[in-house]
Length: 424
Image (cartoon, rainbow, N blue to C red; front, side, top):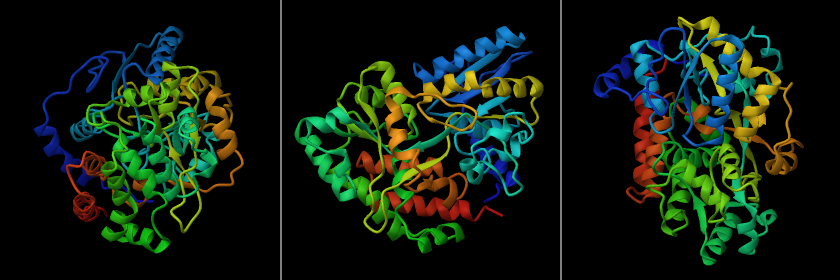
């Protein structure tokens, strides 16, 4: 696995730290400013989400049980930039969600957790993405994110689309056209919150390349032709056809969930937590996921790895013992189940099993049989550390038609060359 260059990374983001204004404090976004005995817990999630409600309840239960106050701060649009500032300043939260980067980005700053009592139950499927070369674990994986195309099945039925007929991307394009023809939004995403645009590119890229091309990405060559053709040309074509939600630029992640919940939209590319949140808006929503379509040269697939509900502890935290106790508390099966239900995701701990209700059939049909390959999130394996924000911005520009697929690809290639050259 690729190792982060801590000194170089800190140097690179110091300029960003000096350029950014102070982060807002409190329960919404930015630096929480926890002081005294309160744990500073910084989470990548949105206000009003089922995940936020669940973690608030658990934090209160922890405080009642231990007497340790927990100060939770959440953010979805500036989480990564704020974390870069805090890493550069050496002033990190006691606990934060590592969102897929517990090894490659945050590893040098995190307390090793391999010897925690719950570590023996970590799903073996997470070993490749969540352990370094020595086998060290740096985060508690409450969830094991396994995802496909997020789907409202009632919209498909109304449009006369059989989900079982969507085997290739050409089949998917045909379905999008049918959905648009009945006045529904074929594909919902968010330009307001940082993440959904990149999520879409990421899951497409996971199966867009040959083994030789993947090797090039890991060895320092960004294959511009392959990336444009396999990823951004496809997304750009959907944008030109008007398949994305009309409110894409102003839509938030919560708006995505609402549109899936109410049957305004058929598909989304993103984390399963979107579906869990959609069920809070409409418990009767007929939602789930289907496999990602084949690119023609390989079969259907799923994408998985470290999820959004992965929690790490700052190795230099002045409240490290309390922070570790908080993670141990979250890992207790009853508490982990509460978070899993809120995220609508598969368990990252083998001693935790829950019924995900409406979402369970999708996991039973596509994940449990282990018949489909589960590809890793593309950026976490094949791109240098720090590429995520560029993946988001370049895809966003293509969806909003502010840039062509060729221009978006060039943006990716230029940043790849810069960041790859900074690696050891």
